[in-house]
Structure formats: structure tokens, C-alpha cells
Image (cartoon, rainbow, N blue to C red; front, top):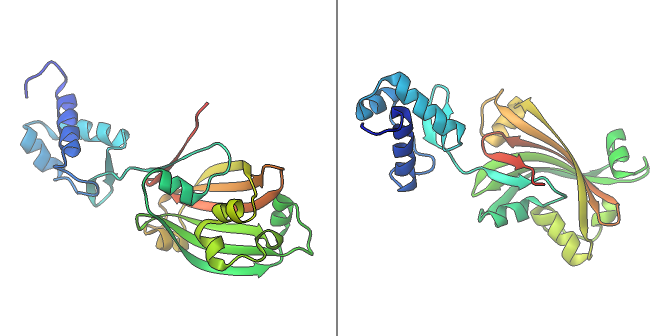
Length: 235
């Protein structure tokens, strides 16, 4: 390869160009480093540098013991106020869906009472769901909602798009949200739900969502697959 650019940059640009042209499609596994080094007539160290740069940019995804793949575009959520999962998916031309794991009415825990401004005499709906984008599992969530807020709505209206139901059926305006994010390792249960390995990194989000009048209506604990979802801030 002859060019003024460093060789690993030339390889980086060529692989990126091939991905853009459809030679390598999303989810495709690339040839081994040895095969690629022979193809580009470079050392494996030089080849590895190009691959690592592409991985750092999110174009490629390296899986230990499996190989290097063309990465899927991550679902993005802008961290500004409460936004429904359905709306996020639709805004990025993804098809949202969910599978309900559990759905029941119960008394609130002490933390749910605190977050949702409830008393021990109140009742909440607690539901667990796996959320998908184009049939790919993105996150597992546990949502707690005061029963009085969702009285009269069907299970489908609540599980398919709670925010849309509240806005269109009740005229509630969705307002701010308080969010806390941390990194954790996937438990055996979460790994099975999200089709990852136990111990893989996941992003844990705790969110309290409010109506515009300041009333809290949902407390959610969500675990996202780290390499399929990212949050971003915009000032």
C-alpha cells in the first residue's frame, strides 16, 4: 500500500469504505487478523491497530473468543426529560416491541413509596419487560406505576406505550425525569433475557418520570446491553 498516510490508517479507511459500500454488512464477521494481514500485506500488529481504531469508533465490535464483527448502530437516548422507549425507537426508524415477564398489583416498597410519593395504603402496578428494537433485546426493565394513574386502561395500552396512552387518553403532559446511571455486570437472569453472557457489562438506569405539574408517575429500573445502547448529553 502506498500513500502519505500511515499504513494502519489506509487499512482503516479501506475497511470502513468496504462497510459503507455493503461489502461487509451489519452483524457480519470479518476474516481473522491473520487473513486480513495477508490480504493487506502488513504485519498483524499493524492490522490490529487499524481494527482497534475501527472498534474505538464503534464501526467494528470485537468479541473475545468469537471474532470481529461489523457493529450494529447503537440505539441512542438523549438525556433530557422523560422519553418513552417506543418514541426513541420510532425516531430512529427501529421497530419497537416488548415481552412482558411479569405484571401484577402489589403494595409499594419503601423506595417506591419515596420515589412515587405514595403511602403504604397505596397500590402500584409492578411490571417486568424485555424491550426490543428490530427483535434485538435492548434492555430489561422493572417499572412501578401508581394504580390510580392507570385505572381503566387495558394491559395492552399500558405495556405497549404507557407514555402515549397517558398523553392521548388522559391528556397528561409528560415533563421532567430524574436519572441515575451506573455500570454493573449482568446476572445470570439478565444475561438470559438480553442474550448476553453472564458478567457482561450492562448500563443500569434508575429513572423517576414526572408529569409537567411535578407529579411522579413512574419509577423504572432498567438494564441496557452496553454495546447496543448509549446515552448522550446535549447542552
